[in-house]
Image 1: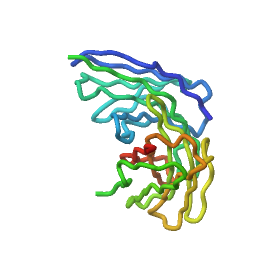
Image 2 (image 1 turned 60 degrees about the horizontal axis):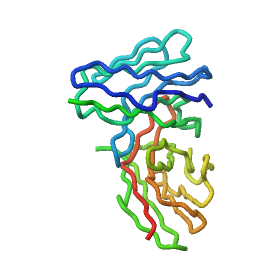
Image 3 (image 1 turned 90 degrees about the vertical axis):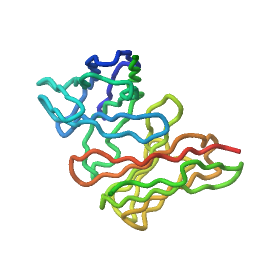
Length: 113
Length: 112
């Protein structure tokens, strides 16, 4: 299983861009990189997923270098409501791959006014 | 809307009692998962099922049991053998493709 390392916590201010980097040196060929957001007492919510290069959707961008040993989640112009825990996951996402996902401790993002 | 429904939202267990947490999905997903989350921690896998009538242990299966009699349902029983059951329990599901897991909103279990 690919282990991930990400900062325990980060602080930011409203309107700033936030970049959270995740290291995954042992990523395997079939592994995708997926980021989730979790608010207190709620289930994790999917943010973005990628395999290589750059992926962008309406809420975030995901930058993956060629060696895929790290990835960076970029949140543009954060607001107070973006205060949450962000999890980086690396694994084979297919349902028939079984328990190939490992959730680490995540990064606690605090957005201040 | 399709999604995953977990019930109840809060549950209390007495010493020596078994309790069952419900998880239902109408996403037509093949695989379902149960995770445990302790305060300030990440998620740990308890059990998962890739197909009806089949399931596998995750990292912390001791003291828990599951069944998968229907594709849309994956109940988790917390048995009296689980000595520290107080936690937030999350159910998830996914299909046989590189799609992300969908999560329910959890059940918080406490000991009376």
